[in-house]
Image (cartoon, rainbow, N blue to C red; front, side, top):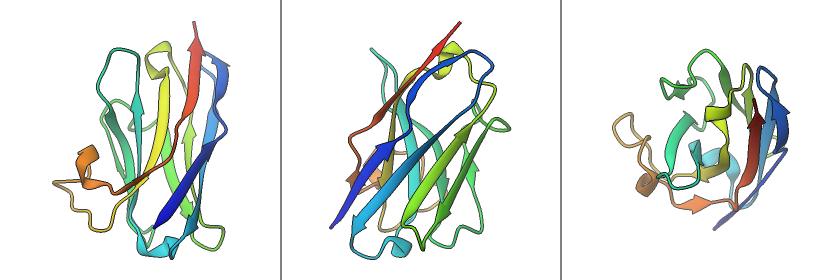
Length: 126
């Protein structure tokens, strides 16, 4: 069992930056590939980024590539999502999630992730 708690959301102006964090507790955090998803009102939850347990590679949705950076610190049991050049289209609740097994084919699907945080709201004003 893994418990995930996101933090760091808030209100930011368009063009600004924000970093959200996800702290894990429970079973060994370093065993799990991690992902970030987001969900805007009236829309489906969408993949944002993923990182394997080793942290030696990263994967991004096309909509955030070059603007967002996912990273993890296994010693601190925390995964981060650094966001820059934010726009109103980035407004959403951001969720972190942990998977037991993740492949390039499955990482974009919410159903591939076993554990989820409660989410943190990010609002970008224009």
